[in-house]
Length: 519
Image 1 (cartoon, rainbow, N blue to C red):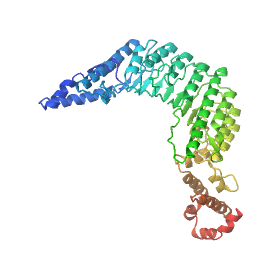
Image 2 (cartoon, helix red, strand yellow):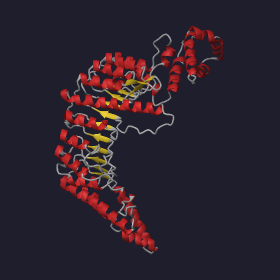
Image 3 (tube, helix red, strand yellow):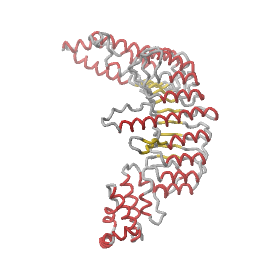
């Protein structure tokens, strides 16, 4: 609850399980107190809901308050274990088994900007002894590398096979290289502790921390391990610049190497008569944020090479297999990107088949880069968002180029051009820089995932205009339909019937063979 104070949470947690023995006895005996017991159960459920999420962000909690909160949570867990003991719930080994009843407690702990500093051993004790916490937010607290190392060492001291922690937010916690290496140690196996199970962290926010080149390299090493579960990594405003960006070269090299390994494994499985089970690649990073880092041209070259992907020859089928990194969302806002670097990314989009979001706002991108992106998008049918907002060097000329790539009627065979336009891009994030023509072009794409349907919308809009129902346009129109019929979809005929009068449609259909040959 957003309006709960630290004392309110501690009180609610302390009341959990307090009267459960009496309540259960009343229900079992069907006594007159059963109604009151049921009322108490409802109240208990309310307390459980109130302690499901601990939200104390931007409040003065401090280390003492944190210790009290952790003590209350662990005490509630112990009372739960005692209840299970009374009901004699044991596993196969005869040891006490924790039931699902304790899983509701403190699933999400939000302690952002709560004046917590070094010395958080109590929190390490909670994470190592409880399997209920899924989200932990300690952002904007002065933990430092020593505090994070202390936290990680406390967690690592326990065998944590049933950990549920999947999101860890450490934004602006003054973490350096040492702290990042400690976090990485929780994501990979530990040779000195064979019983250790890596934490299943999928989201890691390290933004606004100067993690250094060694920190980025350590993260790249973790991602290279197949068992790493990391899916989203935020390294925004980590002062990764100059020599420090060399760690990013390693990171993007790992992403491309992971893609190659996955593609080769898939090709090998395909050539086996009995299909082998897919082991997957758990280290597929999907979201990477590098906003606010002053990256150099060499770093952008590495990013472009990664996005473009690569290929290898499958000897089993004697064919080339193209592969791209797992990245779906890449954020490069305010990274000092020039137009020349942007053009390399635009060229990489031609062969990329994975990216859904590419954010390049607040960069030094001009009209020449906008035109390069327009050319690249004509061959790319997977990117849905290309965000170029607040790029002061993009003028109306660049905006018109982007509009043309979405709705291209500039060529003589306009219907063919419309069929080959980009049909999936939804927004360029230009805000006030956009134009009416670009907005008109984007309205056809929208959220429609059916490429053929979007294509028909654009062609129908073109045919609905005055003075365009000429034989030349219909020649191109039927050429499109003839091509689409080979791949099992028809585009032209439904709209000929819908948008032309019958006499015109009859004349065009009667002369269709000759018309198609001329086109």
